[in-house]
Image (cartoon, rainbow, N blue to C red; front, top):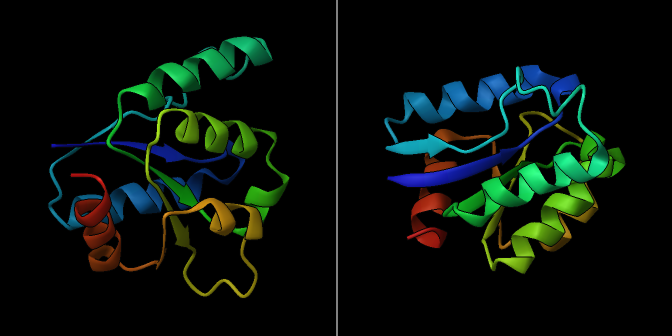
Length: 131
């Protein structure tokens, strides 16, 4: 079983939801370590509490998936998620959104692998980097 942290912004939760559906359609045996939407740390927690929650989640994963949409460049959490992934030597897979003309240079510069929005490509990158 692969233990995955899927970086996302709840402001763009449709992309996160589509990625989870895509992974499920590939019959990948995985556990999603992402911080759930209903976790009060999102709305009531301090920056430190959210950073600590991300750290605790990333620490135990096989790899980190980051949607490389241009919005990622403006997320205050992307930098922290990348730093935490690197701190624990977790591979980062950047996923370029379907049909995106612009993507996040920051995410791609820090990725161990960049893949397109295709289930088989994403799963292959997970198998290659996260075993």
